[in-house]
Image (tube, rainbow, N blue to C red):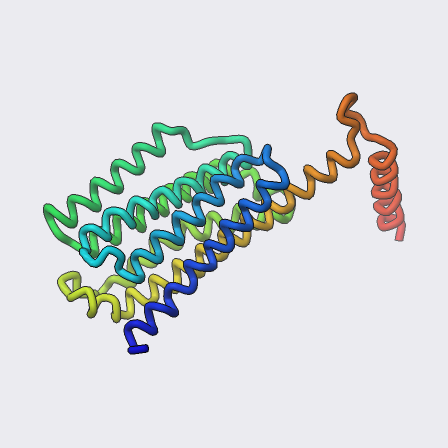
Amino acid sequence: MNGPLAASAIASAWPGLFVLFGLAFGWAWSIEKKRHYLLLLTAACLLFATAAFMQIMLLPLDIGANTIPTGLLYTLAVLAAAEAILRRSGRGMGWKAALGAIGVITALLWYFYYIRPNLLVRIYVQAFGYGLILAAAAWRIRALRHGRLVDRVLFWVVAVVAIHFFPRTWLTFGTDATASIEAFGASLFWNMMQLLIAAAGTALAFALLAAALTDVMDDLRRERDVDPLTGVLNRRGWRSEWQGCFAMRVHRSA
């Protein structure tokens, strides 16, 4: 296997990780189907993995035919993740805002490829667009920073991932926007960007998976401890509640 092909094979391994995340979210949804945001997270992971694989392996080979579809898939993935984050907290983005973001980002990518070709501007469009989408989601769930540990972690991970989209554009300084695709693919910026995307995406996926599994376990525990007809604690629920209160009193008196 030659150098470029080996590098592409290694780079395509991390999109495979997001396929696994997508399968994990789908499995969690199969356990607790009323958590519809899990389906959105499944879609977000699979869309992101597909776009990353297409971009890394350059499928299709034509840059224009690659830029617009992968940009659309990335946008849909970010919007699906943001909507899932909001729905978990009983909120939502709204279809008008989602369609507006899709339209603006896709139109700008098309314009700066076909009308006024500029690779760096296309990078800024995606970075700032995705950063703003996730920053808006983080702002709307800011109450979680005072909640349970898993909720606090989720809020700060979403906030940090949103913020990281802005300073990472500094890596473009000194990058030649007119370079060939081979030269750009070997540049420090491209390799650093792939590393940052993988790290940020993995951190966000882990935080969301931890929150999702916590939600599913809470639902299962509630179904176990609450009588479905009356909505009050059953015998096991009262016993668990009493044991928890007793353990807390012992801890305080110790």
